[in-house]
Picture 1 (cartoon, rainbow, N blue to C red):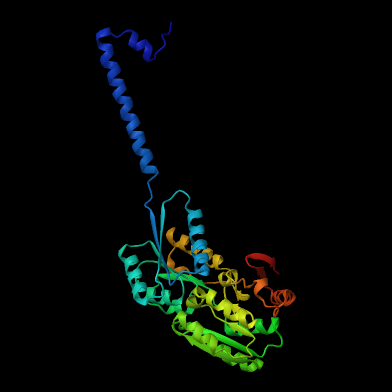
Picture 2 (cartoon, rainbow, N blue to C red):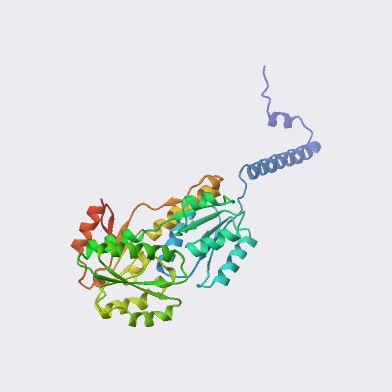
Length: 349
């Protein structure tokens, strides 16, 4: 006859005085096994350290806020269960403060440094030799990147040349004869664009007046110098002028002419029309690059990304009846670009 061999049958033969000792030993052994299992679980699922990302903006305005929001949104979505600290610092158009912010990011050993704009990018590249840099909305090409000794950077390029801008203006205002361009002397990329605008305007038979400012309060002085027969006030992609867009809007309105810009944010704030790209998409593309770097992909193998989708943004209430929606639609169809009314997509091809 077979006797069941289990723990209870064994314990039934044990003398009562030894039973409590055996039960205590079994309890301790069980606790030991549980502890080992817990340690193993911790080792297989290590706690990841928080990510530190330093974002340097030259100053605060709507377009830059959209870029930063796009960048942060993509990165957060990719790491839903990881702590991420976005340290966004504004240089407030102060070169000394900008340098201090970059040095702060270096000292804090940020996992990635993200400069926005050409000036911020150039200074970051000169000061940061090891930490990864993801540049956003700077006039910095893949050719420029390849010339660097330190291959610790990549980024998103979003520039539109002066030739395209004038072709756009000529298309939506075919009879235009005079344009006033207002630009900031501290923005180095303006000079190449101005040279291109001068050459192209001459070829198109357009008079181009250029007015330079150094600080925002000089806009009032510049406004008094605008030619009486000017039909459009134009500004390029300039952070200083974008931050002062609300000073330019009434100047254009008082003359009954459109204010043309180069980004969505300024149109949302009241400019008439702009040819550019989505600022949020710039940030999103930069976020995708940052994710690759954070996940271990060599940054030296990540080329600069160029935004491909051009968008014509317009604000119907600010077109001053000089630019029709029909003209904008024709341009969008002929040039295969997207047409958007203050953030609402109307048409694409």
